[in-house]
Length: 236
Length: 117
Image: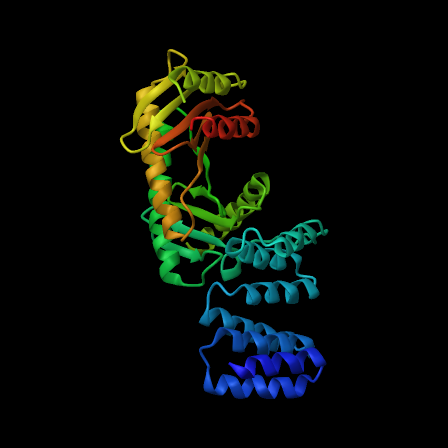
């Protein structure tokens, strides 16, 4: 698509108004093309219009849930705004799609090394980017979603299977004399997943990239479990 | 790998402080293939329950569109079961007390499971 190339060239030359005109005209014809929304987002970011860039990158992800540029772009905006925990979550999501991308891993290392404010690491269950999924032991989703997809049907399916895993773990722990389950951790080639009981009737799932240290995953899980208990108490 | 090699791998795992036993299981049917364990550890139960756990873990990662699990850790208040995938359908499983060094055990299991090929 020629308008993508033209728009990008104009953006790189600093002709941002002209680049935006080209991108918007292209989007008028091709509203479902993720790269067109991504182009507009980069132009908005260059214009210093963070809200416009975020909206365009969210539109990019609606067209293509795995769009790497959109994840990196959202991380950049969050980083520029000083929201380092949010930047980390977007980079984690990007790393799950490209686990060997050195630029993403380097950015993750950098953002993880930054000092955080006391509220910076707060767990926001309702934030789709948090990658925290809360479900009851019957497998019904209560809140949250998974990091690489805002698709609630995926989150519902994960809730059902994660609850099955949590029930199986509880049964195994009882029969083997392991006591109450503290956590279940799954390591795959591209992800690390923790399932943590919150109460007898609910558990949560954390989904992070394979680059996440296990101790960090469990520390975040502890905070998420605390936030989930408070959330459940407010709901009752 | 020979049966003697498997026993070496199991001994390496049980050499970690706090480990009550180590097993090689078939995750397809939950049976013990080889084991080194304390007398009071019901290894047949461990194998069956670990296989069920691995099966549930696979379903969970599939729902997440992630690759299949390479390790599954179940940590309870009084102990833990750590399972690491070897050559299919084998999994190397360790049962540990609550005072075991799980970080070290995880690494030893990964090395030993890799050597099962």
